[in-house]
Length: 310
Ligand code: UDP
Ligand code: MG
Image (tube, rainbow, N blue to C red; front, side, top):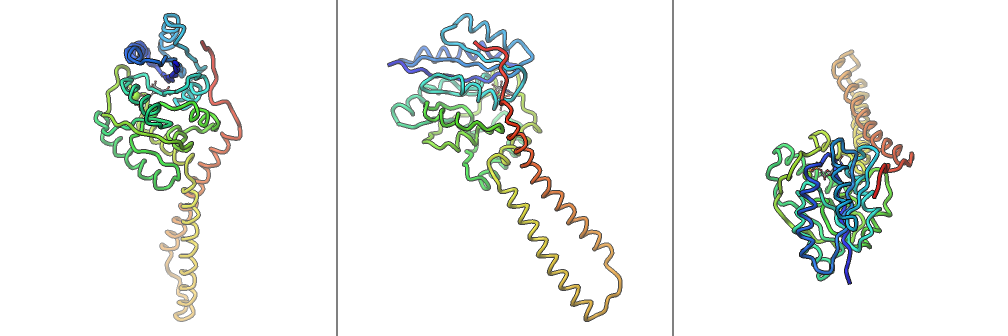
């Protein structure tokens, strides 16, 4: 029986990559027996001709190509969610349009699910060649930190690129949260995942839409959405400084009783006040970060808004 593989392709200003991507996947699709491919391109508010490229592909291959176009740029996470909701396939894959996720791995992924019995076959880059060293360094630190403080395992170097069974996709769709962090969500739902390893590939066209600060913010969001440890650290810091202050107080009282109380220690007093004030603001900031997330979550806004769909 022919199985359908839905490929979700988030696109943000990717007019050059879209036709190249389609050609590359078609080449692989031609080698797949018993599997048909369903494309779901998601136009995430591109300002270039991406949507026109999608329309053209859809007109050319209406049976296999579908697209969803957002009313503005919502983020790759939103695009993935829209694609997962629209996918009808028995298996669902998530692939970047810039061909950094090699479609040639698809047959091996299918093998992993159908023959080896995995629920999901993901991919991991083993090198970060071609990336600025500073970015690689911070990426490494991020994985170290989040894996230490979150119960959900986030595999270092794991890409979003993966093939999943319908059962796993349905589990992911049950997670309708507004603050979406796919790396965490894929892992949180569980299921048996196998990772294929490959070397980092360069973009086929266009350029990355991630700035350093964009990634930095994204990693902080990842930590806040998948760990409560920063809150625990805030309370620990509070408790610790309280304990120190108590000891200091006892020391000062005893010293005053024994030696009298000549006025001194002005600078140290100011330092202590400033330090405690700083700590309070820091902890308040951490708490505020979580409140911000809660605020966005309870507003219950849609994750994305569709303008056009085919
Ligand atoms: N993307 C998106 N919305 C965005 C940013 C990116 O849909 O706001 C898409 C982009 O078109 C690409 C994928 O997400 O298909 C990965 O983006 P990019 O290649 O810029 O990231 P990198 O590979 O450098 O991590
Ligand atoms: Mg890319």
